[in-house]
Each structure stands twice: as structure tokens, then as C-alpha cells.
Length: 101
Image 1 (tube, helix red, strand yellow):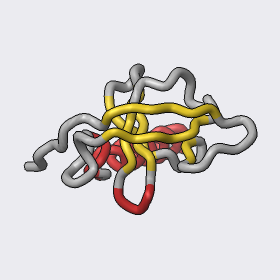
Image 2: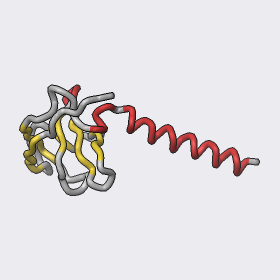
Image 3: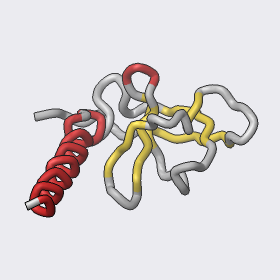
């Protein structure tokens, strides 16, 4: 009985975590006015190679994950607008704004 309860709890936690990613509308790409603009940032390399991204609402950076094929919000402060020790400059062009259903 305890094993079933533990398995059920694990499934609920996993489903909640996955749903949390998909409910962030910027997971799918930028909305207007955040799309189709050039940007500069500084990155410390914590997420691996830099493939692109964009600055979104609340001055949050959303980076492209080549492994997952979608955007992630940088919650760890690994992308900055100002350079500092341990951060390297990155430049890019945000993709065109996406339409939401």
C-alpha cells in the first residue's frame, strides 16, 4: 500500500512540474513587443552552450534549450544585462513574436 501511495505522489509531483513549464506562455517563444529585436546579454555558461533567447516581461531572460526544443526562463540569474566577472557577452536576435491560441 505504501509503495502505491509513493508512486502516486511521485506521478502527481512530476505532472505538476511539467504543467508548470507549459503554463508559462513564454515557453513557446516571445510575444509582442519582445520578438524580432536584437539583444545583448551576459551569460555565465551554467546551462551549457548558448543557442539563443530573448528578454521577456519583467526583465526576465528566456533561453532556448536545444535538448528540450523550447524556451526556459532563467530563474538562476545566469543571464544579466550588465557584464561582470565570470560572464561573457552574448548577442542575438529574438525570433518573431508568436501568436497564442
